[in-house]
Length: 379
Image (cartoon, rainbow, N blue to C red; front, side, top):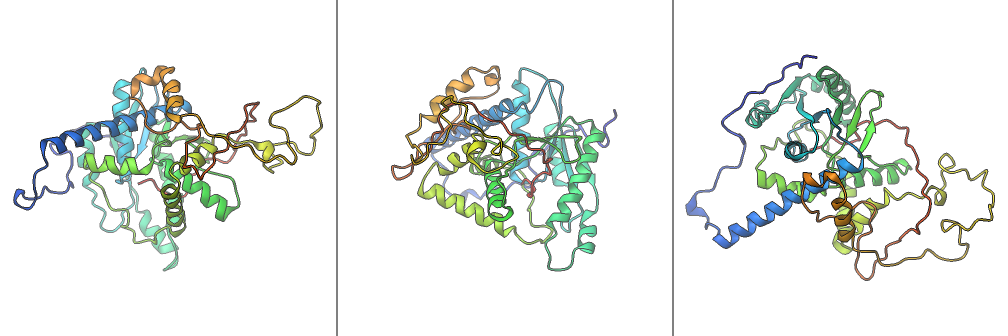
């Protein structure tokens, strides 16, 4: 299949919008020791990002031999980071896969449409810029003062699905990170009345595409630091003039405050998303409460009546992570992680407790709700 508007050319400048260097007279050059420390920290950050992305890809079998991965690039820090990390991992991966970067130019007023093509040419990566004036449609249909995000998201989703077909993409990669997944979980919990998050991998709502989120294990703060280090040509995300998603911002502040007061709490919540116990919830579709009968066989997961939940200190999440990664062939793709393995509890302060579910048979539930690229455009 031919690829529409793919560009493999190269450019001389990698960062057309990088912040210009300050004149030497206005700043004191960092010492050699400070520069060495900065290089060390940046190297550790790059290794950590590669390791966490590798682990997510491996855990959920996101990318396979021969895949063509369509990386959706918005011009924000998250999608820039995703593209950069996947390109680095591809060079070390034990199997072959292709990458094509795609940007949807929705003709928002003031959108600098030269930045992404120039940047992508400098990487020598195949890319496609899809131009569709959805901005005019949204502003015509949505009453003034109302949020445009919902309609804009639906239009964008349909266009990207079509482009994926035209490019022959087997996977659609989005730049959502760990904090996006947590925020979506709490938004559904607080405002939707559902225990529902943003999965690392799911079939799209049209049933024709596999959507993946390789940055699922990566905290946003690491992507912010990486974007600063790499000097990505960030495009502002407020071009359409739409209102800030206040509920998502509120949830983000809540999670940040929790981590400030009890470091590690957000990781414990995140890990809980992969340690679901349907028999201890109330969803009759996931567990047959109506047909439940005593079996006479002891079960650690069984009801303990008046006994309270048993809490105990967790094992070292770093030791578990190292053992897990060292045993997989994908370990050649990255370096030792510094963040916890999903499923492992994180030690908190002395005043906080972590629930460790007793070992036993797990019930795996299937979510039939197709991926709609969530309710947030990755940055």
